[in-house]
Image (cartoon, rainbow, N blue to C red; front, top):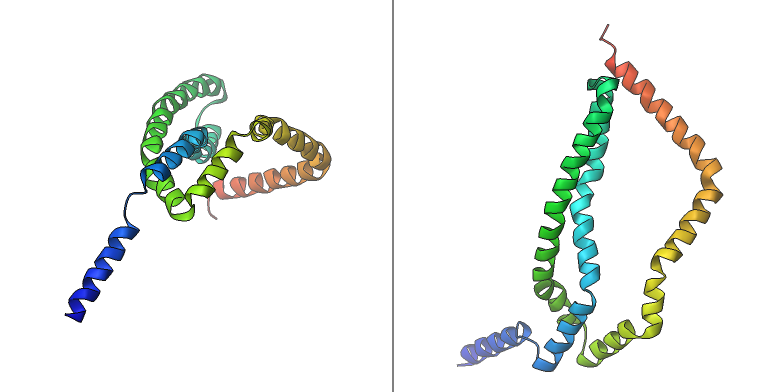
Length: 180
């Protein structure tokens, strides 16, 4: 009898842990998901573009060693067309899928980690005019820092990049030489 009661209690606790949030909390979570949709879109877009950085490096190396100089510009344009096609297909697919997954991922985390009152406070913060103004300044803030950082460190970074390029060039030349 005690084992049955204990098992029933454990099942009830487990069911409560995985239960849907109450309607008011669910509405707050949905509102937050709507507010955060631009961030979800940015994440999905970044995910679409992430493999292109590695691919670009590989293509540049291959073009440098395999393609005659007079053919490189035309090939570059063709490759840019392929990249654009990939982005045009991958970005919407990832954005759509991210939007569909958000309630079962982000929504679940919001439900687990925040009370209704905290969700209300978070919504109020995110919707506040001051927060909107700050968010709109994001690119301006970032550009300001990046411009100053580049200007401030250009003299230190450029020689390091040049040294790196020379070192890599020497290694590539040495690796391209036939074994003795």
